[in-house]
Length: 325
Image 1 (tube, rainbow, N blue to C red):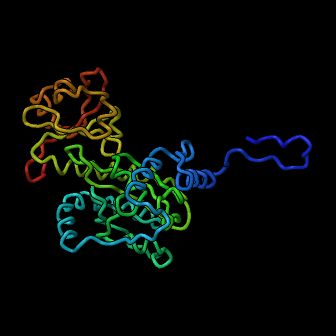
Image 2 (spheres, rainbow, N blue to C red):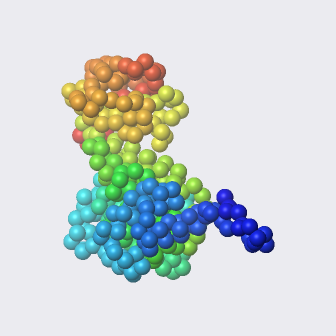
């Protein structure tokens, strides 16, 4: 959209009213937010804007050089100890993800819920990536409180997937970075980790947000299964072809027949639940614990109808305390 030239100045070029490119919008947003104290609504995403607002309360100067300090050796040892179960569940998928990204400049980071890196890709391009060379180290804390606005920092604060590109990062020193991150939750519904893919020097050449979301869902599913020893594990979906994929719905049933947890796919498939009491297997699956236990006798998925009337294919397995079905 353009403003017309004033009368008598027909030779003047029209003045552009709104920025056209993403870079121009972000530049205008930074000018309004940092220099003019104006809320730049509509120029950057709400998640980025909320992060800038949080950061401005603790980091007054967005132009200062930030230090990517590692945590103390004792805290790192404790962090890795607490993350052992997570790392074991994630190991295979991290290898698959890194193999997929081997032909790109992107690197994989996995942080704990507090923003401390517990796994990172060792990349041959590290020498040409000065920021990544400093940040992509096990033990470095990349929480929002430490390094400002980043995708993993936003995820750790909000629990929702995020993408941050270039100058959307709070600190100037990170303006060559592009990152996409997604949450990984545990059986209690708490944030257990953040999976991130980052690249330096140029934008992503592939769909980073979708890639990281898929691998994060797979890691989360493996972690949920690992943490469900001694419980009845249900895998279900509207199509049996989706079982064993990142799109499968999972549920953990405790010894009283209550639904102890649902993964994201299960929540989306089942729909809104009442928050006042824990749902029972009968309430959701239309079958009590005894009936579901009988389904463990078959390894093949069985067609059932949920209490809502929706037809799904379901596999049931009872995991012993050692994790064996």
